[in-house]
Image (cartoon, rainbow, N blue to C red; front, side, top):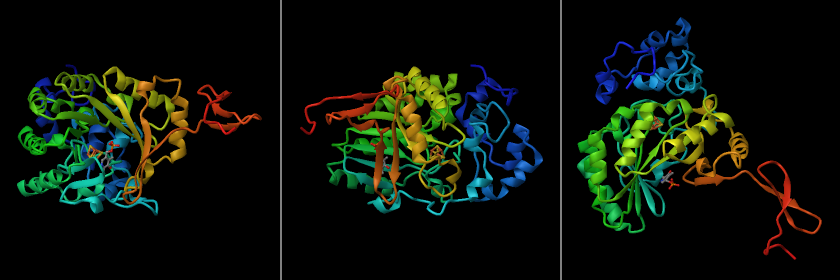
Length: 373
Ligand SMILES: *Cc1c(COP(=O)(O)O)cnc(C)c1O
Ligand code: SF4
């Protein structure tokens, strides 16, 4: 495997492909980032305060995906601290979705009837600047204790309506195979659970983590496992990422992707078209495109709902339907997810027949049986 970048060109390939090496060499200080990327002297000063509030962490691998040393590079914008992180809009909060209030036992969030979310840890390979759980960055959530796991499992055993558990965090794949395997086994012991869904950014930020051992462990679980990845930009679709996806697929795990619409990273139709079709090519189904939540420290990434709808409108009909995710956002305070479609209804003609705006812009009547007569 070749390394994609001039950065780290001296690192032996065996080290580069070792996920533990990547984590040990994750870059965390402004000085190191500035030096590695050759950023100007004043850059570090402008983000000292942001870095103090929200720590940084980037794997050498993820850093090597950048194609320029500009803080506006779509890769660097997702991982370099930015002074704008301190400028919150008035509605921004640490936990706008009120996950903490829908939590019946520690780490378990049960909001929707048939599925629950379990927070495995708060660590990640890369601290994404747009993270919706920045609130956990300060409290370094360790792996779950036996008591926490038992409480969650007991709750689920009493709640027969729950048929799916989502493992999230942080990134569950920062845990060792043994610890993660223990969590998966615990949930697999709940009879009515059918599906375990692991949300992870590792195929994007540290594809080396998808080892043969990990895949073997995952494929042995008696429940149906799904993986939800988090690719945001076509440059993240590297050969390494494709190989990691392939290993998971060969282990029998289907893959879906959740992107976040991010200002200055992917908020145009052509970038997202490349991302979504590129995901299809490596057998990852684009599942959601989320509008950014009003999370403290991420206001500068939010685009507005209209922008997302405009982009989805440009993509519809012009891009494989299989490549198109649902555009969605979360209502504040546990209101839940809302899926939005571009509005294609265009009123009625003189006979009262409904009109629709087609993907190429023409207005077309569609007579149908439920029309008012
Ligand atoms: C998003 C979310 C889920 C999963 O929703 P899906 O639409 O099934 O992907 C489950 N629980 C919580 C609390 C969530 O925020
Ligand atoms: S990988 Fe996910 S949980 Fe971790 S920092 Fe990035 S967005 Fe947040």
